[in-house]
Image (cartoon, rainbow, N blue to C red):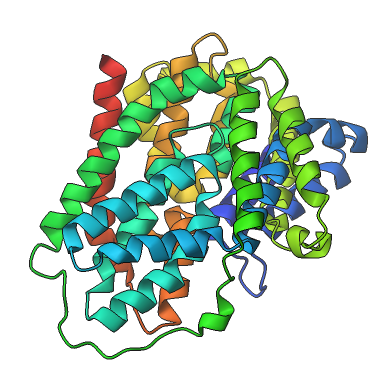
Length: 403
């Protein structure tokens, strides 16, 4: 029964829908978790214990910190500062990608894309620039940058917590290939759009400026101090989730920002997805002999100890199921004594997000936000950039693992 429920759940996650219903991946995962308990595969108590609370707390806390910066107008202000370089397209593209990568490494890359896209697209349209290379550069760099740290994206947080990886060592191993991949992606974008950086005389279609948060220096400064303090605490023996929830709690003690407004920006769907997948994975783990599964993989020639093979498998699974479910599926097979295997999983699952449109939520956010301003980024257009960029990133990752 556990295997059947597991396969049905992951098949639904891969398809992203159930025929005849308007349920999405989060709903499918939640139904899978409910079924695991309802059919007696695991008890209610075991289901609750299966949820990795430190990971959930860390994710939740970082969402609150990101909400502080977003409501303070920091993201919009950052995007507007970059636009000062708009007259020098090549330099502008590099600065945009670098800033996006750095912010995504410290904060949620989805929020960076959500805040940057409308400001960026509106300015590009007004100036007659081709918005495609810059918007694609934003999505790509946010994915790549988020791979550099444990707190850059949800799957890294999970890997860092479950693998008990040190914050500093994670950066030392993961940041260099992320930086090289960022540079390679920038050069790839320059080559692909070498004669198409401008459109010339494009009509202006600006978003309503009132929909963009006003820059509040005090509130933004509070968010920045919170991020700096949090990173500093991550280098201490204090558990990461304790540091994060303490900082988030301090930000909620505000005389200006309502708690409802801050918590309204927390991605409850993503948190629900995490909790549901923890239960589904626990159900199949509890009812299945993992050693037998590992032996079967080995018999098929799949050696997850081989980082090149692990990279390839992670990319495939991430583009079938999405990167968070793929990571949860692979984590039980990771060697707790081999941190480089965990680093490889983190980088590969994140880099895989650039391959196709559906590989990353950041991609979908940029495409959706841009479409509201009349900028269409098709599946084919994204793949024309995403495929070579992902190949470059994976080559860098495999080469880095051999050093």
